[in-house]
Length: 292
Image (cartoon, rainbow, N blue to C red; front, side, top):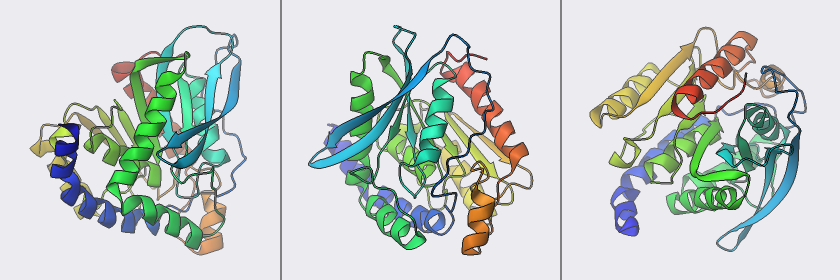
């Protein structure tokens, strides 16, 4: 039955992902080697967040993720899959996963490329992102593999797994929910929206879309069409825009990267902090617990 449903949506999703990919592939230019820290949450002083390199399989492909959890807790916590930007599962994605773990979750920084691949140039990034965008079955397979890997951990409540994605990862998270990958809720930070076609599968998934109002890669028409798609199926979503925020506004090195590649992106500290607080509020409502 699941396979039949997937085939039903495959054509529209394929088209939507290719079109959405074109928007993100030209715009997901956050730092590809970010090691900076930007502590925006007050971690519980009793926590001891550790990182564990986790190798798992998606069919015949070896994936390399990083599991972040509180070593001092034996409680099975709600889990979150962090989906990286088009640079791969680098230190930026891993830092965001650590920050989410500090809120009281067990978090997997997942690998969507295989073998832990990270890239240094836009050309490499586009090549690898296109491989995922152009093949919905591959996208679903790799997201399901990440979900199953996180669910197997004794640190996770296997019935409570969400997804948080950045740029490429935001688009992937929405597509995964659209294809019945059991991630609820889904949060997208500056992900692509162009051409998205909502399926009934996403109706009951709480969604938070954090979008930069000045993002030149997301048109007014993209936003209006996305909202109409969500409204047409009665989806449960919040769409928040941040004034003067461009694409990749949460990545604290995107200004430097934008200058390097002559792209209209920049880090926006105010929007970054505000969107993080909006996410915390959304999680408290739809996916507790988190700790102040």
